[in-house]
Image (cartoon, rainbow, N blue to C red; front, side, top):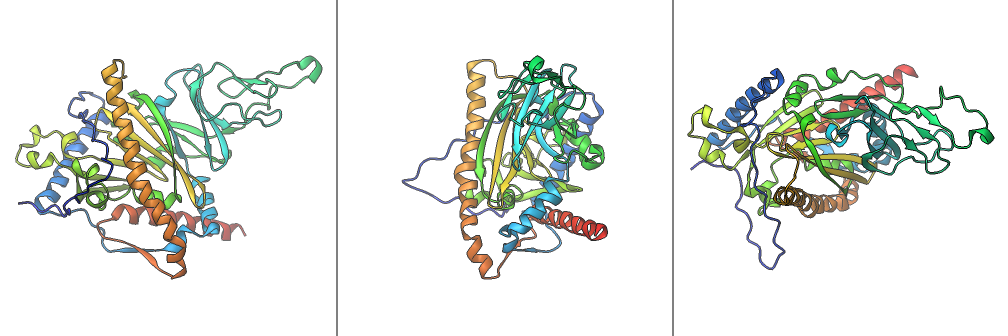
Length: 429
């Protein structure tokens, strides 16, 4: 019998029953696109299955060279949190929207990021823009957070209006207000770009980012997932603890059997995965239970979507789960304060949900995802947050095992950004 390094799920009585895992349908095995990126993605998937099969046969998982310790105080220090925000979230291109959240001309997504109201739009020509969601007259917020359609952006305070590119187009009662030159009075622009079905925005208006260099060799694999062709079904929000406490739970499979015995562990093996990195970004690829049947099949008869459930993770906080399937769950984690973050759960579908049965299936998928994260993952991480102060006072460290390479890579990357920012500050000073 193959050892899976997974404890038996605990039997529970007199407890609310967890939501039943929705049925998953592979997409990657049905994709016949001749696009080079899609072909490269399919080849990468086949190679990834072989790697995970090796772990399954041996009862192993991907391991880092050693363990890593992280001082508990690094999760609590308000000054360090501020430096993280400056060195990371205010410095790198943030993945703030999926392209299908802005599915056509004259669409928008409004989102608050670190207290900054951000407005992302797609203009009548289909180009994506980002700007500060504040009227240039008196600073009122133009649109509340969410997605929608609008041909003009009209301020609710005094009715100044802008086009979807942010240019000032109308001033209410300009005859009595006085003339307002249109040039230079548009909304404050933020650098934005679109790659692989994801919209990236910089919070620094003066930033100049090379998105292709930022994504590196991961870019073509993301393009191969063809998320730009997906349909946005729903978005829900969850409050969550400190951003690093929250993200730590996304980057390992070690907890599947113990924390999710009746949910995730029913479809995924625990503590068994492949791991890859591309610069600051990474992918964890857990083994799925049908791999037990696929292990004896020839390679051309294995469906990658049945064997492996890869989670692509874009630094600093976007997780894409189910990219090889018909339904995709995207998690966007954004810090709010040193002790709180917010998570947007975005459900994408390969095909629009038209019939009642299709909508019911999409609802079930989104509800399962929401309840598992809220009632199992985040309920636990709030408990982690509650104990941080006492642990920090005792001078303790968290230890990340060799079987938790995703955590190690994430924290090393945060450290590297802080070190680079400190070096730049010393050079400038």
